[in-house]
Amino acid sequence: MIDKLKASLKDNPDAKKTASVYSDLTWYYSTVSVDSALAYGKKAEYEAQKLADSTLLGQIYSDIGSVYFNNGDLDNSQKNYLRSYTIRKHRKDAFGVAKISNNLGNVYRDKQEYTKSMKAFLEALAYFESVKDDKNKAVAQSNIGLLMVRLSDYSKALQYLNPAIAYAEKNKLPDRLCEFYGNLGKAYMGLNDTIKARVAFEKSLKNCKISGNQKAISTLYQNMGLLKTRQQNAAGATALYEKSKAVAKTVNSDHDQDNLKISIARSYLKSGKYQEALKLLTEIKAKFLREKKDESLYYTLDILIPTFAYLKQPDSVLYYQEINKKLSEHLTRLSTLKHTAELETKYQTAKKEKLLAEERAETRRKTTLLIGISILTFFVIIISLLIYRQQKLKNKQQKQEFRLKTAIAQIETQNKLQEQRLSISRDLHDNIGAQLTFIISSVDNIKHGFDIQNIRLSDKLRSISEFTKSTIVELRDTIWAMNNSAIAFEDLKVRILNFIEKAKMAKEDIHFSFDIDEKLNTLTLSSIEGMNIYRTIQEAVNNAIKYAGAENIAIDASAENGNISITITDNGTGFDPENISNGNGLHNMRKRIEDIGGTFEIRTAVSEGTTISILLKNKNS
Image 1 (cartoon, rainbow, N blue to C red):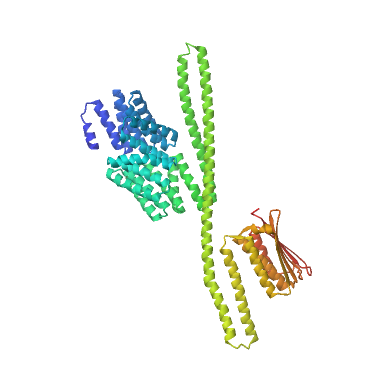
Image 2: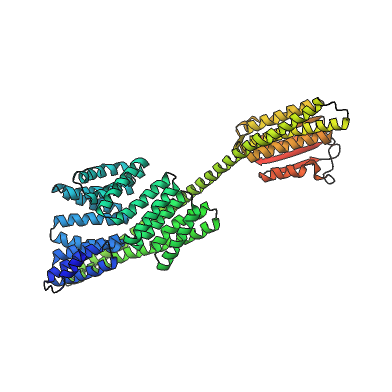
């Protein structure tokens, strides 16, 4: 077709025909070569302007707008569509106006100007309904459906998409079904209905292949890859992204391929492939820096920041947050300058009109000028306030998203740690616990199976048996702590009471007391805090029994002034702290308490007993 059109240009004296052929070449090249399409568009515009043919010029501007839209240049696309809209509006071409409104709606949607987008789509839809143009009505319905997907109103999106699909199915329009089913798949993805989304994307792919829409096929593979990512199928997602990239190289612009890479990086981030995401983001970040694409760089860093957060690189997070903040301020300034320039242009136009009327009414001119300046100042202030408010909301949202992503990462880490704890505790119980039990059984068998006359050997066997039993108790305590991500103080109280009961059985001549404040019963500790407190109390009591010769040992726990206070007191012989070695475990007790953010204090003297004080911050208060 392109060769035939080029051939028709040779020796063709008809200027209007030449302009029309250039317009057709613009449209055909729009999906093949952007540069060629724009070159023919400029030629067509030049010829149509020489002919002063507004009808043809309106079509040419529409075709050029489509070329820019397909290449991701939304500003130039909007500018050319508006030129076409103005011409067709002037010519009272209602059908042409409706078609351009549909195109403008797509531009406004991608620029996130959703109010303008909806207004444009509804203008088109109202016209096509009034003239019973069901084909173009279906296109408008599908576009509104996609807009509703962007606005996260997925149920409303289905209300517009289903009638459009029904029409296209009835009339067997594969090019439209390619587009409509693709939009339907996005709506079902928003509703988290992955089964219906997959069916819709498969139907879309089938029709895209029939119609030969390679650009849509590339986008479909990208969306299907995202769907696989949500289903935790990383291999399937990667395969689809590779297909998307292969197709994109042949039909998509650099802009589309860059967007594809950003989508892939976002998918890597969601599926936990943080290194892959970092590699891809680093690549496109460098490209956007070279090409000075500040807006694309801003969105890339917006994904790069949480990637560094998941990789636990806080310095990089802070560094790129600062860069993104400056980028945001820069983009805001550019937007403000743009709006200010537009207002200035309007003002200058109005001023010229007022100067022409100045001869007729000098007083009226001055009044009008003052009104114009006041209006300009008002709009500048309003726009500045709106931009400031928008930026403030955006920064707040980014902070919330970062906190949420950080919290999710922490939860995932905690879950993995809990799984590791459970696995280790099972191994301890099933392997080491069984082996220790076997040792006890073997020692008992030796003691009962042989007539051991050697008292030292008998004592040694008894010592081994008692040490092994003690080790099993210690092992059970460790497993108990590992199996709990959090330990209630009441559970800790039960453990301590069990330990005291065993101590009473071993040392009947010692009086034990344990007093706990009822306020502490609802307190929750981490497994490390609970275990360290338990081990410290256990060590203190054992020291009092073994070395102090105490007759009374008291344990008191209370809640006071937002703290947890625990004291272990005995009336034993005491000791001189300056001359005592670390053999009694004093160093270990102190370290355990300091490791969980507490303070450890020991008060003792020879023949005056010993008091150990533990003070911890009550995190539940």
